[in-house]
Length: 277
Image 1: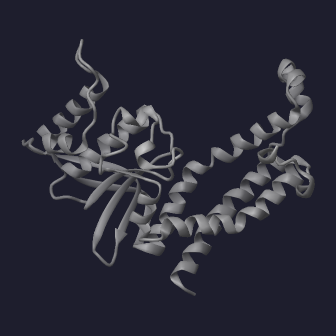
Image 2: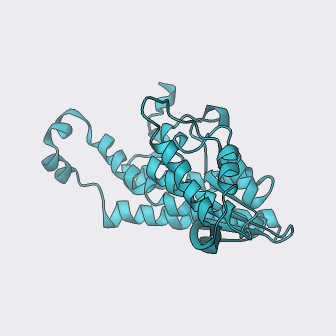
Image 3: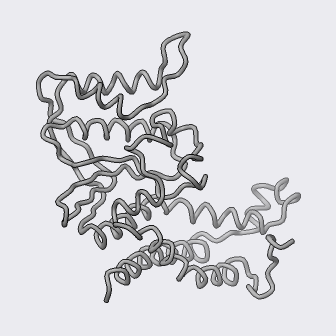
């Protein structure tokens, strides 16, 4: 079996496991109950067709599990691509005391601009250079990274803070602190650390416009940020992102058929195509 075929099948196994759990939840464990919905939200039910809320019911049970699925997919891509990947990896190293103080200073200045001053724009290179000028005694520091990857051919080690495409501010602040600590360790325990998003809902990198992470990173320019294909190809090599898309598209029709028939109770052949109305 070729490496690309192995990666495709491994990606599909993760997606299938998640989708099978989702289908089991919405059909057996936690189905949409029209009578319960009407009793709990009589005004909504009077104004809006049940099918709309049935779709929302499915969406909530579909979107929530994807947090950990992205990490599992990243491990698959890294293992099949660069050679090794794992989640929740613990990294311990020494960071000089003044560097830790400067990390706190950088984060505080981004969160709380001085009175009467405009908010400071994040700039990874400038901030890291400022932090690395700090000295002092060594302080043991532990960081738990979302995804840890080793490039077994190039002997490189990478850490990733992998977050949902539209992350909140608090999560991003914690991630930035982790990245600055990892880049401040002596000796370095990873060759690079990144803040990563699995895909870009805005399309192009230069169009990314979600405000919350932008408080902590220049999402369009900081080299510590990877979005979409940049991330997948970093952990799996060139072509990984397209391989991921192809693998998902290959199994998607079967799940769409099940959702139409088993959950919505609609025959796919007679469904309304809203895009063509």
